[in-house]
Amino acid sequence: MLKKITSALLMSISAAAFAVPLGSQSVLVVEDETGKVLLEKNATAVVPIASLTKLMTAMVVLDSKLDMEEQISIDKEDVDTLKHSMSRVPVGATLSRADVLQLALMSSDNRAAAALARTFPGGPEAFKAAVHAKIKQLGMTSTQINEPTGLSPENTSNASDLVKMASAAAQYPEIRRITTDTEEVINMKGRKVSYHNTNRLVGAKGWDIGLSKTGYTEEAGRCLIMRISEAGRNATLVLLNAGANSVRLMDALNIRRLLAGGNEPKVMQASSPRRKAARTTERRRRRM
Image 1: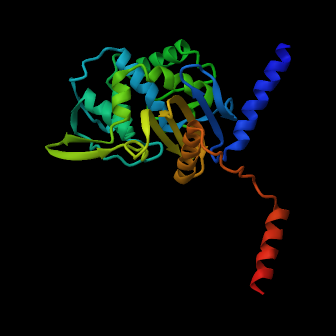
Image 2 (image 1 turned 90 degrees about the vertical axis):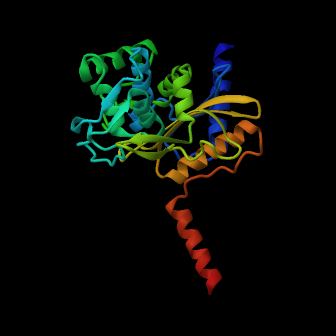
Image 3 (image 1 turned 90 degrees about the horizontal axis):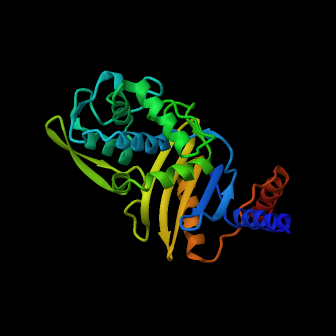
């Protein structure tokens, strides 16, 4: 009997995945109140997670109960020498730890995240040990995080573990607030500079977002974690390794539509070379 129930559950999850066109390589959508899996695709595949890492960085920093008003200077050690990514936070700028956390989460700034680890009590090695302890505490058995920014492809996880991380991060009021801010003006070396959320859906009409974090590296593709409310339903979604921003956005829109109980989109299946050739031939005939 148990085997039949399990089989039926797996079939229903699989059917939901095929009913919604999903461009991201790994997807997991979980109902927050019940833990019920609403949508799943390659949820156990271990892949690089890019700046989704910064949710873990934030939790470890907040767990340490450090003075958030303490002033931190951005150092040349915080400059990305791995990917040579750009930053709008200049070396030499001095900010409160709270502002540095704001930039690391909302604007996904790598220098800010690196500075949080560098100024952690005991330095980067102590920070790394605290991250590993937090991973173990949360039961993220398929996760490895070795640095605070997500630039390293060695920061890996899967969608199942990342739902756990998102659920834990949502327990921190500061993380909920910062990741759902659309914009923040910060005093940067004597002038006011406006920084924006990397998730264009935050603040968009019709979206009720309780937690958000984007990520991108060449190895990880476009990634997204969100907690959303739609039609009285609260859910956490994880999207990993989308090929483009538009793909990630379309996946989020389709998941929101599924939560709303609207008509499910048509299945989008990969075309075989034979089918593509047949369509090309048909188009040519129409032009003749």
